[in-house]
Every structure is written in C-alpha cells, then in structure tokens.
Amino acid sequence: MILLDTSLWIALLRNEGNADAKRRTADLLADNEAVWCEMIRLELWRGAGSTEDRARLTALEAEVPSLPIDGAVWALSCKLASYARSVGQQFPLADLVVFSCARRHKVMIESLDKHFERLAVLAGDMSGTKG
Image (tube, rainbow, N blue to C red; front, side):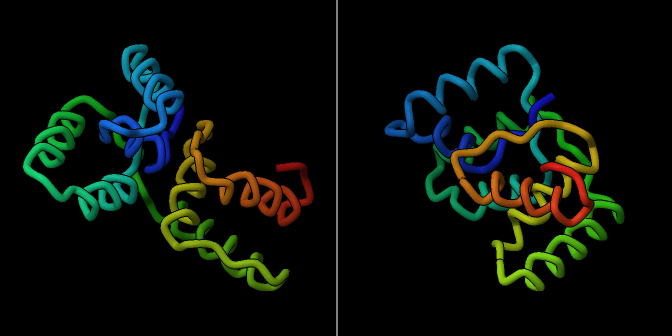
C-alpha cells in the first residue's frame, strides 16, 4: 500500500493535471495499492468546486481504502510539529497529519510536495535514525 497525498489525487482528478502523476496514480489504483486518509479526503472535498469534481470524488470514496487517523497519529503529529518548531521549521498541519498517518501504518507516501521529504529527514533526526 502507498498513501497518495492530495497532490497526486488532484493530478488524477484534473483534466489538465500532471500527466506523470496522473498515470502513476491511475496505475496504483488499478493495482489496488493506493490508499488515503481522512485528512486527504477533507482537502479534496474542500477543493471540489464542480458537480463533476464531487461525482469523481464520490466514486473514489467507494474505491479507495482509508487509513485511520487514531490517537497514535495525533501524538506523532504533535511530537513532530514540536520538534520541527524547535529546529526552526514549520509545516502545514495537514502535511504533519498525513505524514504521521503513513508512519503509523508503516506505508510509503508519495507526493509532488517536497514537504514530505523534509519531514522524513526531520523524523529521522528526531528519532536518531535516518528518515
């Protein structure tokens, strides 16, 4: 399983989306490898502006498994946010939760967003291991 961040879902849903990301997301869906979490669903619904967008998103909800955001995800998100702040870095809250969800469920994360690469390094530094 691979947790696909909002950026990849947006590429899939937009007609003019990033072609490589669109293809990669479609392939992962076809192989039943793609997952998301509720934070990603919320970000997508916030951006769903048309009836067509909402219909596509509704169809995906029936197909894509969702990883739960439980207390352990929230705890890791808080710990990571605090550590990041202590070393002079800040991240969007949604990215902290999505990253922590992937860590909690021991799945890879794919994104077009470079925040996740930085978060992996930071998490490795925080735990004394490499990202």
